[in-house]
Length: 118
Length: 111
Image 1 (tube, rainbow over the protein chains, first blue to last red):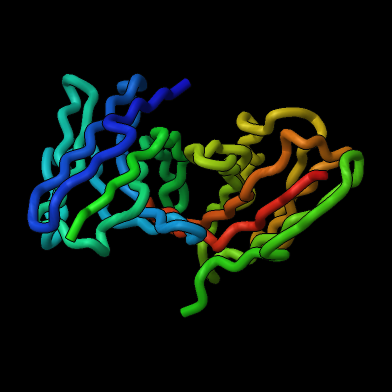
Image 2 (cartoon, chains in turn brown, purple; image 1 turned 180 degrees about the horizontal axis):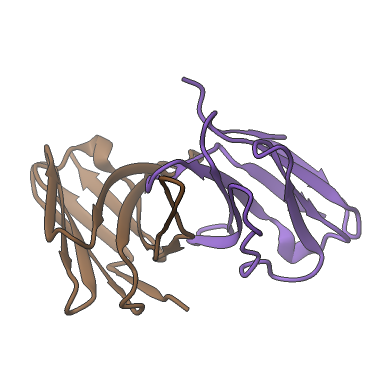
């Protein structure tokens, strides 16, 4: 089955700096890669995702890059703010399609605790 | 619109008792997933339902765990003869396309 490795496990940055979290996956058939942010005691929230037909996607201060050949993908957060402090999880999925919908179980990395110091 | 909801939010049970956890997905979402998050750990897939297809049960840790989805909407995860290692937050998610949206979870504590 799929295996996702995530690094680093903890990351501490100063406000305004950039943060990068990296993940590798094992199943070359995986085609969907979301990133989730989880604040303490809260549900995971989807912040950005990428499908295997693109190499990069950006949404304001957040970007994700995907290297299918090397089977790794990364989350980049620029101009970090204290409210970015949370646990970030990467995930990978081999999604299928049926009846116009897409579905597939997510395999998660172990998470990165990001702390942004004011 | 309303997001994914789960009940109860917290459940404390004695070892050996059965528990039922409920998930109400977002209306119109055909796929429903159950995950488990142990303290300080990542999320572990348990089971998912897609439309009328047979569920993918490949993540269930033992035969004490089962789940059903009635009418293509609400789902119930049942854990029989609970053990202390079952203590975790059980998260439900639903999707229509690729994006999975999570509920707030049920924190299960087995004493």
